[in-house]
Image 1 (spheres, helix red, strand yellow):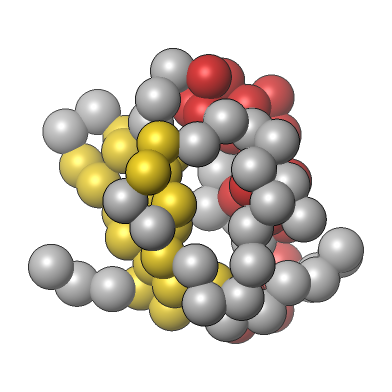
Image 2 (cartoon, one colour):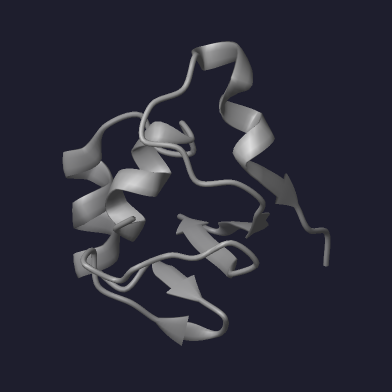
Length: 81
């Protein structure tokens, strides 16, 4: 699944266009490498998203095409540090 779609489906970012813009502006990295929106995210990848001066790091646990809002957070686990 494309990383921009994963960010939207998992509700890390609410809109796919915003996720796409974040990728285009080098705010998203996977396994330590800056990626474009078309990057194919896989289970086990560590994704880092930068929002201003804050950074969210998480590991991909599951990939689903669609998910309910209540189940969205089960697609990833937050990594501290």
